[in-house]
Length: 266
Image (tube, rainbow, N blue to C red; front, side, top):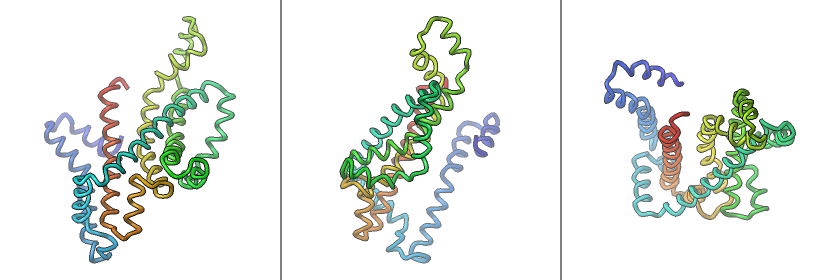
């Protein structure tokens, strides 16, 4: 729980709901407004406006790009790549994490592999992925998959390792086959931690995707950022950055909302 969470939880019983909503709005958005104001002041004074366009110009171009639909095909392609890469990392990461927690041989095999893979910047794997898969969607999906895999594996592994032994013993005493225990007992007990791992992986997926598209794509948000930067259209480049940042923000908030609504018991 953050400091702000603690302070406003303490005020829950003393402030009416409308005031609490206003307080949350101030806490979340005022720092961003301050940064935008400093950015506006710095543009054209501290830094040339050609290199650092003011936020007013950036937001105007952002609206134009969205309203015209020019950037939407690239955004759709990027979101598709994230969805596939993240989905694969969830499927493989949960299975691998639970498997490592339940089987010592599996843990011994994959622990070293994950320990060696983790420190490598995923963007450094893009040239190798290009050799294997070429320039395009497959390479971007692979990079997103590798970047998102570790947080999901670690959260699944730690949660599965800490599952209450009484639950497993009870299932065994009721005659449940050993191969069903991870599916029927362990995975349901680890759902809260798995959801946390997915929450951590979503922003990582956006970071990995843009890194891959900057190098190995002819379509997508990362490609648009690179293209505008190469032709010196820095206002549009910043606008595309705002769009992908907004998409990541709403993806995380949407996931958190869905988690609260659908899986209340976690």
